[in-house]
Amino acid sequence: MSIYNKINAGFSLGTVSPVTAGIEDVIYIFNKDDITLTYDTTNPLIVTGLTAVSAAKIYKFEGTNNSFNTISKLAKTPVGPRYTEEIDFNIAGFSVEVKGQLMAMGYGRVCAIAVNNYNSSDSAVELFGAVNGLILTDAERSAADETLDGGYKLKLTNPDKLREPYPPRAVSIAPTSGPATYSSTIAAIEALLAS
Amino acid sequence: MTKKYILKPGKHQFAPRSPAVHEDDSLGDEEAEWYLQRYPHIAGLFLKRPDKTIAEGPEKQTRELNESV
Image (tube, rainbow over all chains, first blue to last red; front, side):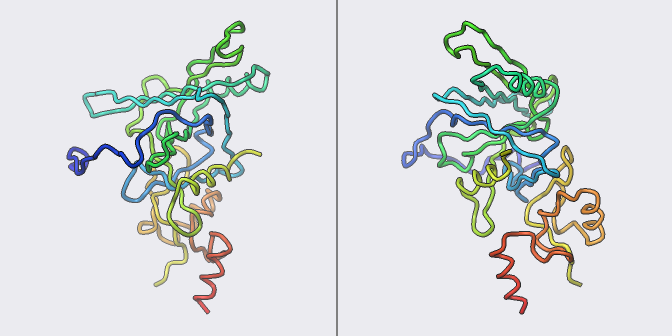
């Protein structure tokens, strides 16, 4: 316990690579029961591996114009800090395939991986819903809405009464040899994509 | 005694939703065999298995085979 209630480092303003806002226009989503995770031995905030159960896949949702967002917010509780998570994204379409995926995300639990625009950090690629998963809580389509031009506006959040015990995990997957980098992490995720 | 099954570094989930508690130090050969039988998808998490020397890429496989010669 003691390691969690004492800080052990300070931080300066990163002037060499200043922090920037936003995430890339891509969200990787997978069914929570489809992928098992490997964590760093000493730091549970780092996911070092993703393993597909049988032939399970990760699905990629693409957007444009910096229209996706992630939010992680601390919630104070009598038993310690918990974190609420939100993923805002949209789908440029409303076909039955799209609707089918939306229904599935409303019933089942998924996890989501977002890629931050600021990729100098070791948290450039983040995993949401690692412990309790996420469900689709908003799926709104206003046919005449000019902002989305009739597309679906979506939000994934923690299921009712459940929050995450950790902030979003950093995904950092090493190649076959050598240390983990941004590129090796993206390559490992892309290798699990449905074709 | 040399272990027949060696897990890659890290704390692994063997089944979805399970806690990530499996690491090489705490996994015996018999246990590893049991888990592999029931959860075949974890095969790739092993560096060394009796039926397949190295679960990683061909480059490392060749290197390790050369070392053992």
